Amino acid sequence: MKVICIDAYAFTGLTYGKVYDEVESEGDDRFICIINNNERKTSYLRASFITLEEFREKKLKELGI
Image (cartoon, rainbow, N blue to C red; front, top):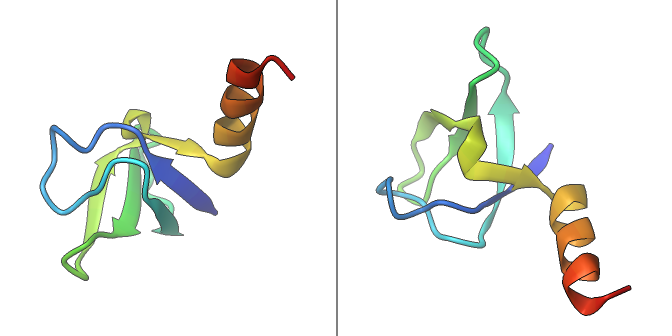
């Protein structure tokens, strides 16, 4: 699944607004595992990401569509 970073300030190795691929699902739903900007597979808080669909809906709402 593709996800977009919405909170890069708390983490190194992430870029706000960048699309990342979720590489595997951890047992704990609070975390997501991705390949970060440093090419390392790392777990981050899921709340720091939204799906492409959620991002699309947010942008359409901002445009009033």
